[in-house]
Length: 301
Image (cartoon, rainbow, N blue to C red):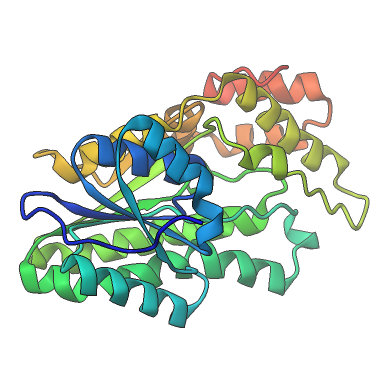
């Protein structure tokens, strides 16, 4: 089982906490930041979940320390960050990466489904941010990087709970950026499209409890099937996180990965008539054609 002991960082090393560091974007980001000199603490829900992370870090010749923190639980977050601050003394950068998916059309999404996904994707980030902000405010510096999604900028078929949670995190991030700017604290939003990750192979829920939304669920899988064929390395997100914490010319939003820049940047330019026509397309080829016209992305497989 991996070791959870946290050591004192070098005074010149930035201390960076990456939540959900055991897989996908979180794991790639933690390893990348460690490789460029960060003292990285990765949070996981249980230490045994971090075995692959630690093996990959060892293979990359970097050190990553662990803390147990379930972002969905107030007490777990409080304990985990108290431990990190007690051992490391400070947290310079927080990367709120931990998240879950949530597939269902709006009509078939129960209140509990929305609340469960929101509790992780929105409240998890705000819990962790609240845990680090007092010491950042006291020092007058720090960075909070919130990993949202291209689905935080644009609707995505049959993913209503996920989309709602990521849009909410986008709004909370904008709000936070205004509130903490007087204290010298930077907020950045990272909006990935599709990266290489095991999460997509696991994200196969298609409730379709009414039987009325075959097209919406099929189009969701059509998009991800195309995305998985062209998915980018999640280390791209790690490099962008590094940039967001060090640049002298910061931006609020950074789109990245397959489909990220195209869809995020196009959102405010979409003609409503084109959006409605895309939704109304039932034939897969017609849907792909309209999708390509709007976003310049090929989702045929």
